[in-house]
Length: 209
Ligand SMILES: O=C([O-])CC(=O)C(=O)O
Image 1 (cartoon, helix red, strand yellow):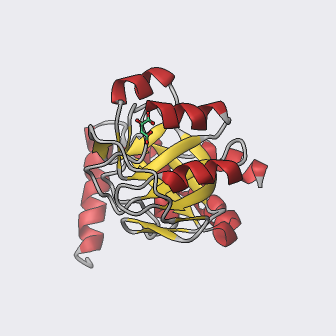
Image 2: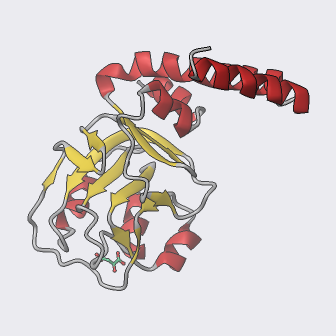
């Protein structure tokens, strides 16, 4: 599995998404705090009720180095799923990143940690720590259903989840997509003539001519 994760980590999320017909994409409001962040790892999941992040802390007890902490707070924006201290804990444990279908706070301090965090935005309010919610259960982050152990890949374009049982097939299809995109760019993006030939061909094919 480690090798599979490393190989996914070399592919753009766009190709992984295309390989799955876009069926496992996170809601595109989930974005990296810095464009250069690229993450890939096994999901440890947190289902968090609005405004209670105790289960984020509990999940850290179960996580292994390199894991991606994926938090579903239903994109409740008012209270943060984490601030700089909680993200600092995740970083200290050697996890591979945090993906939140929710907001964070202390954004500037979190950016200074240089630890990859993906989220829907920022807020000022912290969460309470009451203890409802669950860890390592299936969660929903927009269109993506994420099961514990799925492979999470994120970059500047967004985040995708690869179902664990489909990893080998998706990896092969994503590699193929990347190779065909690169081949097409080499062939078509040469000059105005090659570009127009391609457009003509595509439009004619689209019209069934
Ligand atoms: O404790 C929290 O939930 C949020 C916070 O302020 C931090 O992580 O620094």
